[in-house]
Image (cartoon, rainbow, N blue to C red; front, side, top):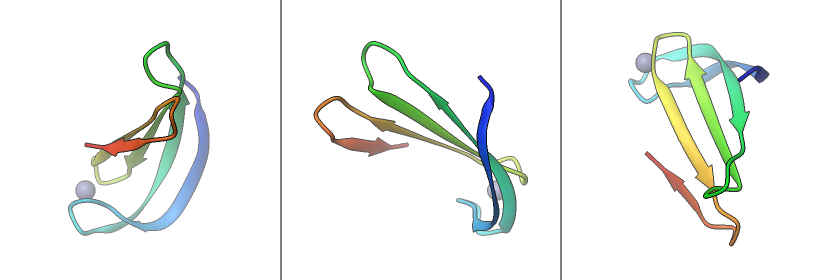
Length: 57
Ligand SMILES: [Zn+2]
């Protein structure tokens, strides 16, 4: 996957305010998978389904 964008000064799940990159991927089960990669090492994966529902883990 290639980075689709960058962000700055976002609060990571660990509580730090860091920069990072976003990645997007598409597959058959999920309409869109968005990954937020924080500079501190945290990773947030967000799925957006065909019906519009969203889950985070
Ligand atoms: Zn972190």
